[in-house]
Length: 595
Image (tube, rainbow, N blue to C red):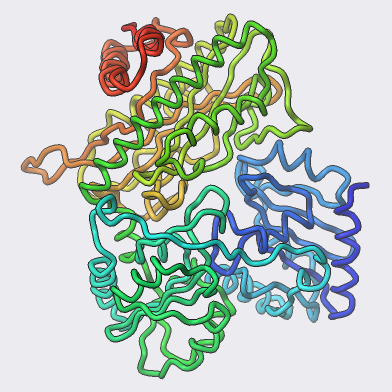
C-alpha cells in the first residue's frame, strides 16, 4: 500500500475524534485558485492524485469509503495514481458522470455530519451543499481543518518578493484600474469590493511575483477597495522598497494577510460589499458584518478585455515563443533518429529554450509532452516513473507555454516522428478542420463561446468521435494561463465574447492506449464589420508556429481550409524568419511550404 493509505487512516482518526461521518476536501485554497500554492494542496497530498500542474479534484472520505471526483482530462491519470491509496475515482463529467453532492446526501442518514474547511470552499458551492444536506436532515460543520494536524510536514505559506509589472507594457496605471474597478462596483449597486481571486488582485495592482504559485506570477493576498480606502492584505515579508513605493504612489495601504477576517467583521452595516460568490470563501462570507452584494461579473470583464497595448505586446511574446519552438522542434527532429530522446528530457530542453529569453519569467504550466499512448492522457505530465523513450513511429503531442512579461502563451502542436498511419493522418485532419472552422468564425455582438463550440467539434461528431474537454479557455496577460469569465465549451458560458478577449482554440481527439491529437492556438476577438444587422466580430490568430503538414490528409480539406493554412504559414514565416539564423530559416521555410 502507498503512504497515502496511512494519511487516510490519520484523517479517519481525526474524523472520529470530531464526530464527523463524512469529510469533503477541496482541491483549492482560500482564493479558489485553479493551481493553489503547495501550502493548500492537501487533497493532492492525501490522495496521491497530483502533478506539477496540479489536478482538478474533490475528495470525499467516509469511515469505509474514499473517492476523488475529477473531470475527463484526468480520468486515465487518476485511475493510475489512485491505485493502492484507498481512494477510487468518480467521474464528474462525461456520459457516466456522478454528481458529488447528490452522492453524498444519498449515502448519509439523517442526523449525520458532513465536514468541510470553509476557507477552501466558495460561498456558492457551500450553499448548494448546505441546501441539499438540510433537505435531508444532515448537519454541516464548515470549520474542520484536519491538515493543521495530520499533515506534519506541510509547506509554509509562500513568502516570495513582489515586483512591479512595467506599466508601459500593461498600457494602464494602477490608479486607472482602481478607478474603473470602482465604477464597475457601483454599476453592481455596491460601494466597496473585497477581491479574493489572486489573478484579480495582480491585475488591479500591476504587481507580480515568481514562486507563490507554480507557473503563474500571482501572489497570495486580498484587496479591499472603496471610495476612500485601498487596502492590500499581504505578508509584509513579500514587499520590497520598489513595491512599497508603488503602493504608496497609488494610495494602497498594507495590512497583515491573516487580519482579513477580522477586518471584514468591522465593516459597518451600510457598507454594500461586492463579493464574487464563486471566488470568495464561505468562511470569509461568514465573518462579514456589513451588507454583502453577490456579483463581480463586470469586474471580471475588466481583466478579460485586453487593451491595444497588451494585444501588441502579446504579439511580441508570440514571436519570442515561436523562436523557442522552432529551435525545440528542430532539435527533436534532429535527435530523434538517434533513439535517445525521452519525454522528460524534451520537457527540460523546451523549458531551457524558453527561459533563454530574458523576458520569460517561467513556463505558463508544466509542459505536456506525450508520446503515442501518453498523448491520449489529456493532462499527462511526464515523470521519472512514467517517462518513455521517443522511438519507433508515432505522434508526439506537445502542449506548452511561457510567462513572458509581454504576455502569456499557450500552444499545442502534434507532430509525426517516423511514418504516421492513415488513421492518424485522418484524425489529425478532422481536428485541424474544426480548429480552422473556429479560427474563421464571424459572429454578431452578444455571441457566447458556447454558441461557437460546435464549430470545432462538427467534423469529429460526423464520424462518431468526440472529446469532452472545453474547446477554448480565456488567457490572462502575464497572469494565469486559464482565465475567465469567457470560454468556448459545451456547457453554458454566459459571458459574451468581446473585442480584446483572448482565448485558446484547442480541439482534440484521444484514443486511450494508442495516441492523442490536439491543435491549439491563442486567438483574440476583434471587430470585423458593422452591417444593418449590427456589429460583427471575428478572431485574430496570435500564435506563431506551423502545423505538421505531413499529417494533413489533403483529400478531405476544402480549398478554403487549405488556403487558410497556407496564409497562416506565410504569416508565421514572415514574423519569425527575421529572428532566426540561416539554418533555422531554412527549416522553418520547409515547415511553412504551401500544401
